[in-house]
Image 1 (cartoon, chains in turn green, yellow):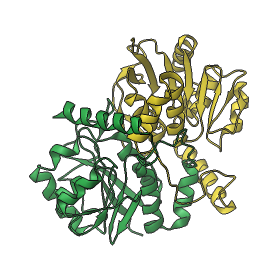
Image 2 (cartoon, each protein chain N blue to C red; image 1 turned 90 degrees about the vertical axis):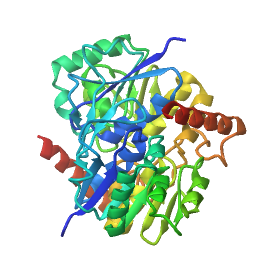
Image 3 (cartoon, rainbow over the protein chains, first blue to last red; image 1 turned 60 degrees about the horizontal axis):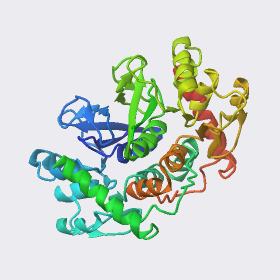
Image 4 (cartoon, rainbow over the protein chains, first blue to last red; image 1 turned 30 degrees about the horizontal axis):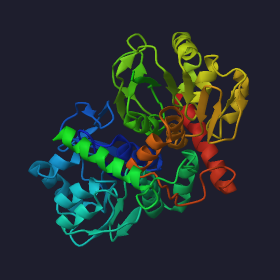
Length: 216
Length: 216
């Protein structure tokens, strides 16, 4: 069987967990070939204070079967990056699957890949999807035809397991779920703005605004 | 307030998510200073096909307040690494908190840091803790005095949120939980051997055995 080529965009100030969660799951899928793609092969600084090294460039990455764009504060300036958006569009048009985690859906949107599609995003930025002709969906993992998009950050794990179940079958996904001991026990009921208290929501909105300011 | 220094061991063939999940949470804690520590600063290959770059060496890393050892197939040979075990013991003896995720607890054990302590580990390796005088505990996050250990891989997120709640307070942990949208929806009930079907458990045990063979 031909390997399934998975291309994951690795850009400066990506939210590390948006990328590493899904890649942990994808890399465990039998027959998957994962590429971490950026403009060059120099180590890329992530949002949380260290660097991850790309394994392919926009030029050397082959046409992928599944394109995955993680999110993070670094996606904001990239929405205006013509070279990158063109690469995403070209890959996305020919890929079997076009996917994202967190605010990665906004970058997919900027590349014109979500027009008329329902899509997920980080809760604080979900409504921004309308600017790109996408239809915001509150689901943690949202599939609309060949677009599969995940909610914020940790949703990438649920997203990737669902992607693997869909493409490689449920048995494969169940094995990977056990492999990574994914039986979560969140300590608080504070993972969605609908659940968190008002003070927490306000303070997180401030944190997010400050993060963006720091990068602007 | 003095920053809380957190040292996370980054070793060859670490399970990437064991490290990146907790670091995503720790790095978001106000006043935390995170070091990814290895013997040198060259990019370190992780278990899932790419490299992460350390930010400190065993020599340059200051005495940390919280020591965290993630797991993965690469911890097996390190249990015999006298230089590393000595560093872990020295740091661990002086740290306020000694912690691990997944099979990182086996490396803590090898360094002599879990004698007489209850500890968690990846479900498939939990019983190996007894070889180091530790008491295996089936909890997803286990605290015994100043030792806090997490179960397999994804347990690192629950672990880190509990650590932050304990050290920085519940409000801080709740904010980070919302920030990373941690309201998990696992697609299957297959995250623990107690829940998964027999075929899945057998197949994952085989996968794990093969991983170890590949590195031996």
